[in-house]
Length: 248
Image (cartoon, rainbow, N blue to C red; front, side):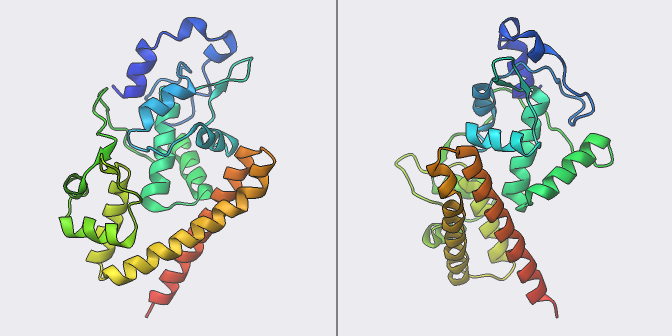
């Protein structure tokens, strides 16, 4: 049973959810084999997903809802209620962004194909409490990424892992180490890795700046949408440019 399914069975929220929220959403949405009963609050979703994706926030969940990637049920008072199936959709979107740098439009197309049954994605069972620690030291990062300590050191020197705390690096750093491992194995080196990180940081600053005007007006969802749109576009341009330049 997934943590979401476990939480929905034991959360005890069902009696307090208005009738509208208890109505089952469309059964055609993926993953079809999981419960679509909207028994989970935003805080429940964060608790279940943040161990794997520590940067997930309520604003990010609103962003996914605004783009119709994950559509929770709304209670009469306007609160979002999620089902175990919704939680798995959140994980799918975040994995697509983290592991494959997939643009939102393409993620939406994949979800539509999953809904229609023309694309298939395994939903692995998750046991409650099997999420890893929030922070890892350098040796643990190397082990989790299936690589050598020198790759982690290259990531540290390149500034790819962010700030190191007394508890270590945030567990999401495994994603960066895996990416660096693949880059170095494909022929990259520490110098060009540093250049890539600097370029990505500049694009991140531009993306943040794109959302600043809306943020100043108190439109946090709009600010996030602007930043995400520019970041997605930058990723697509970079990937296209690299592929084009690498052709013989």
